[in-house]
Image 1 (cartoon, one colour):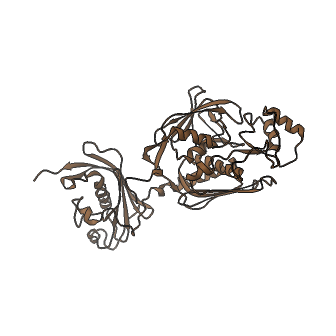
Image 2 (cartoon, rainbow, N blue to C red; image 1 turned 180 degrees about the horizontal axis):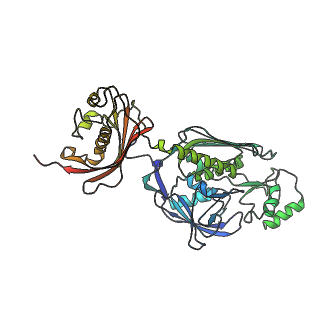
Length: 472
């Protein structure tokens, strides 16, 4: 049941004040400055390249991902932004839906290699609740992704929340097999955000040869040493990092870096999953299980989730009717608002009611008077009465609640009315009416939909006028 005061997490959020962050990109080595600014509801996360002509904007969306080599890069309108995953994870962890990120380079600063500093900057700016609801989408069935070559397995399970389990296994005697778990997104800031990125020592020279990690530093990445290295190799890395004291600890971590968690690498992989799946573009609920995840697999998996949501998105709009729950308004309360009476009252219950929408229930039985003449032997509810049922439901939005007996509503217009399924005795109609524009001068425009189960049977745009009754 929905009320006019949804929980905090069901509102969209932005930030209260602008956030300015400067630093180097881990791969390009470029010094960049980001300005994270508040944005209007329903605009999402957008990056704007202020250093390019025309200042093009690229939306943070999985459809714009063009590269997943060691990080996630998006591109659109001639604008490219790389290594966005740690920032995207921070925004997700803070339940921030709408911001504009102005950036004067092509890569998000790596900072300390985790999401923690992004979280701190955003927390300092403050979070602003917006006057728009956040719609979460549910996974209808298991969504699987398998890459046999990389031995990757990922699955999204239907779940009333957001939980992630990750398992990593690099056949490394130093790392071993590691597992990390995020039970709910509220734990992200404390349990996952501080986890830093990592790589193996034997990968460093290859990464450098491929013109990557120009901004790498032994202080913003965990370097795992699980194979024998020579003094010359250590010296070369020391010169690249401009450090004189590079060494390998007994624990197999370069420069004796203190781990923030015993399973910090697994937690960072989970962090990457959060950041990459934020690009699905729809807030969703699921239990994610990821075995050996990586950016390439994460993005392919995100695309499958997005396709699933788009396919079943229409079902999200279907109101949930549980006959075991008491209605918001029963038939006696309905009669105090509507002027209709038997045999023309087409609403039995009101189960949801806000300032902008209403959901009502109409039980159709064989005893309806109109079935005597509307196809005897083939009982079908007249379409005009389906439209009338919608109009009566819409009366609960249109008629002032403090003095319902002083007003009537009259049809002015019905547009785009479609009858997609027939309604027969035994059907339970779910009548949903949504206000399309604020009521002005007594004119009320609403979108109406009639459901039977998960099927749309009727839809229409109804325009009515609210008229004050003349005094007796």
